[in-house]
Length: 481
Image 1 (tube, helix red, strand yellow):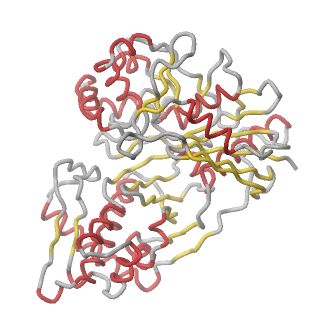
Image 2 (spheres, helix red, strand yellow):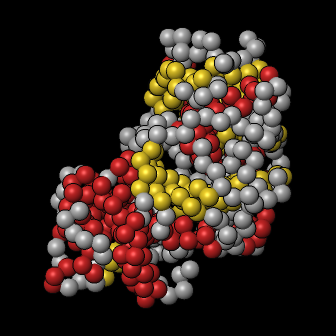
Image 3 (spheres, one colour):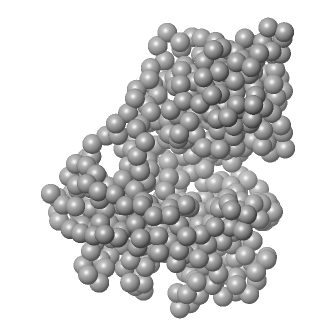
């Protein structure tokens, strides 16, 4: 038996889990917030990466890592750390979904010849959050900092590099590289010309190594695995495989699934990411998920989502004919950036609060079912759906999701799956170094404790509700898909 640790450096905190390398059992845990805040109290767009190290040190305090033989690192995706030729930060890291870069994304799309050209080049179309778009913004807005930038790292790359004592060799993994906008999951290669297109000149990029490879050892001899992005680590921690999809319910929504091949999608709805095992992880994003529920709760004067769910359960499937297209912030899937939401089917008998509450849940889930269908249409097999996020626990979500998705729904018990995935990666690298595992076979860990929901007799009713949603969508936005 060995002991490994996984750390997840999210936008808000660092979580560390220490696990048995053979079973994945969590032995102990640590937590610390990130000591950063924007002037308005929200998440900042620029962060000194030293804050990540301070949080890591606090989370690992009290002997948490005693006896640990290997560490894996997961960190927020889309954070780019620009370094000069000596490895010093040129400016704070640019993190998160930075709205400052929306114009830069449009510039890049035009500069390469459109969305199809980007999809063919790297499997995704530039979005505001991506590192390649942030580089374009940097070149246009801070040209002196752009000119000084000689090395580009993401958050998990930078943390691994720091843990190793800042060696000359810098590494990353396929998953992290695939989210940059200048590495292709299909070819397994960087596109340095796209870095130059965005930044104005070439820069050194980390070496992409295999999922089971070690990035190196610390001066004290502790093994550090390659690391990966938060999305890939969470998928690895959940243990999803072929036939599994993950639907994540945040303010916006995302659908991802394991697939053996990279998908090229000229519409830009599919982002072709790589996963943490050597497979692929196509992702489809919706702009409106839980924000739809929160907006409806506010409209109805309800204090929280639990109250909205309780009200929705007083209605019946189909919400007495009410259909809500939840495109409150425009929409990405389908690509309708300037549209608004639509409420259809108003009749005297349907104008009740409980029916609007039910329509909000059904509209949100039907929008995510549309995203699932984008993947299914490209040959991605979906036999079961893992449903993540606090809203997944709501009774109204659990009552409607299996029938609307048309498949088994699994609601895992809340856990630090990104940190667990990082620890599992560390166990893989440790097993490789000891000769007990090979590069094709990750350690088999205990599956997530979960509630399993079946469509059952509700399937036909759910599919009728879904067809009603599609009919309203096609009438309102013909040819959107």
